[in-house]
Image 1 (cartoon, rainbow, N blue to C red):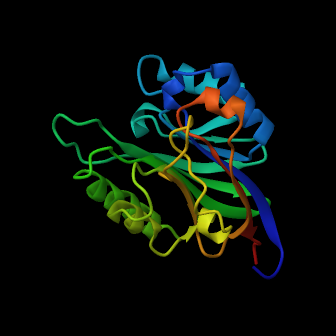
Image 2: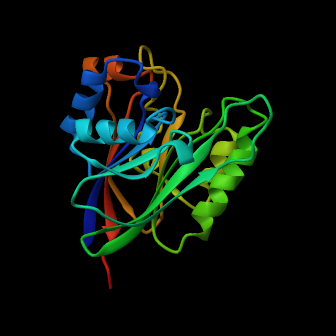
Length: 233
């Protein structure tokens, strides 16, 4: 991407409901030193506000959006990032299935505004396309450059993945790392976690953090990306 831009370091991470090594989880994120973290399977039940705040604090970040209203999707930011507005979304309920949703935050960094978004789609292949369409409608309606992280529970050959990805840049593909898998952590063989960005955003670097520490922290490996937001005119 030609011209100056504003750097943004992003982590997208399914933290497995914090059921694994919480100290390792905090260390993985702190070492990455992100500006924003897009969390799936974050706190969503009893005392969820306090739990979200405690998780953010363990990462050295603050809560921007999400928690129970977004059904475990959570957006966290460093103090470098200013949150201008936030909202949550719940997908249509299929009886007997797990509720799913998304979180959104309009953010400002270095004079540039962008939309941060995160979601976690169903493991049920009949539900995922409907949820993907609901998520995509919100992303497509955005006028700001979009940075969206998600656990899609399917790979790039799936219809839900293609729905969300349409018109956006798959950060792994842009970095030539589409074969870097994120799940399961003990022997990664699937790429079901993704980071999609507006075509106006440059992908400087992309990594899947696969270390002994990250394998203790969750059943997913986190995505870490360095982006370049388009400079304000």
